[in-house]
Image 1 (cartoon, rainbow, N blue to C red):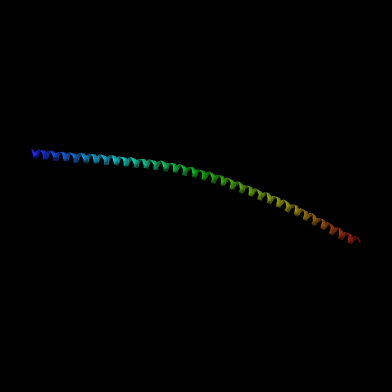
Image 2: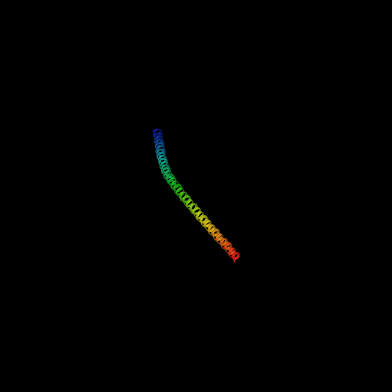
Amino acid sequence: MMKNYACGVRFVLLLVVLLSSNAQNAATETSNRDDITAVKSKMEALKTDLETKMIQINANATEEIRLARVEAKEAIARAESNANERVETAERNALLSRQNAEDEMALAKKRSEDAIAAIRNEADL
């Protein structure tokens, strides 16, 4: 009878060890699942954060491109304005030069006529 009792105790101890191991494995598996879920959640949060940052970067780049286009248009307008001012200045200078040349020609003609008149007056004397 002691043999049966000892076998029964061994069986119960073995059953307790197996059940304990099973419970430990289940707890480990649950912990692993929780860890996997936490990692998945973190990955999803990181993905969302990355998408948000990419949208912001894209928006910033779009704004920088828009500002660069505005600056380029303003620079072109300034260059055209400066070129137009230079053309107008050159036209005014050319007109003034022409007027000066005409005035000098008229003055030279007047001097020439005066010189001819003076020579004629001397010849008449």
